[in-house]
Structures are given as structure tokens and as C-alpha cells.
Length: 292
Image (cartoon, rainbow, N blue to C red):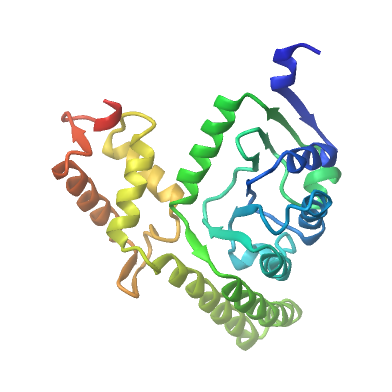
């Protein structure tokens, strides 16, 4: 095998051995980004960490989408996340509603970019495909991109995950009742509970950051990749923060605005960053000063 072949290799289903090899390389920091997570797949990760005696020392970062619809569909194990978080001292959970990437990074030694979620079907049941990277410079860039992406999300404590899990049990009961019955009352109860659970997630988004700070960080993140027109920026911001950029309603939760006034707050963030010399506008495109 050539040196180039070792630095870049294909990842085909099933890829459980590739994931285990990646975890076996971790000394300090394992970062996993996946919209769907199941207990059995996470236990594979923990088993490999235990084999190397690393569970207590490794920083384990998980970036995912905690929306209740995923748990209702059976593609997200909130109980498993809570249990694992309690058993790994360096565990850190980030909720980001726009997560679609499936990327796994061991320190700066190896990264796997794949279509496979952190679930048994994603590891060995579905037809998935990806690449494994072992070139340090590229792996560092992948990690940096993902950490910047994760900074746009909300940190969620294990206690809060457990509370969400308890709410999901209620939601499932109401969901089953609504499915079995056409009675409006059951459907209303389900919708109300779903709305309250989504509100709990929005409160996590409102913790520690104002609307202005969230959009300012997002503009820095997007413009670091290159110049963009305002008309191009808006849909990208909305894709990253669908919960903050709901065109149909306007809500204020703990001082953070969620809803149809979001473009106004994006404009305020643009002007703020411009006044502070972080971005500039040439009459057509916005550019990050550090990348101009």
C-alpha cells in the first residue's frame, strides 16, 4: 500500500471496523457529528474506549439534532445519550437543528466522512459510503470546521437530556393515542405536548447567547468561507438556524427573538460587524476582513 493510499481510503458498508479503528486512535478528543444516534452504536464506541482505558480521560463531543420528531421516529435514543453522558466525565453534547453531516474525528489523526449515522443500520445495515482521512493537515481542517459549526449550537446538560427523554415518553403515549383515534382532543394534546417539547429546546438555544450574538457568530462562520451577497447570506443563515428563522411567527424566549423578524437581526449583526472592522461591504458582497 502506498503512502497516499494510507492517507485517503474508501469507507464501505459495513464500516464498524473503521469506526473501531478510528476510536482506537483517540488519545484526547473524539468528536462525532450525526443527526441520528442509537444506544447500540454508542456502546461500540464506549467498548473500544474501555478496551484502551480511555473512557475517563477522553473528551467526547457529540453534535446532533435533538428534535423530538427523531425520537418519535425511533432514530434517536435520548435515554442512551443521557446514560453515556453520565458515564463519560469529558462528555459534551451540542444541539444544532440543521445537523445533517455524519463525521467522526479522532484527535487530529483520523477523520471519517460518511453517509452513515451513528446507528446500527448506519454502521452495517444500510448501503453507506464515505472516505477515511489520515493526513494531519486535512484532519485538523475537518476538526476546525466542525468545531466552528458546533459553536453555533447550544450546549445541553445531561440532566436536560434526561428531562427531554421523560417528555418523549409522554409524547409517545399521546402520539399513539392520536394515531389510534381521530378524536380532536387526542390530536390537540399531542400537538400541544410536541410544541412544549420544542419550546424546551428553544430555551436551550436562548441560554447564554443573545439573538445578536448568535447571528454575529453565524455571519463570521459563513463569511470565513468567502464573499457573499446579502441575498445569498439569508438562506444560508436560515438553513443553519431554522428554529430561529421561522417566517411564520415571532416569539421572544428569555430575551432571544425566534421568528419572522430574523432578517432584521441579521442586518443588525452585519452592521455591527462592519462597524467593528470584522467584515466589509463593497456594494455587492460582504467579505470577512481577515479573508479579504
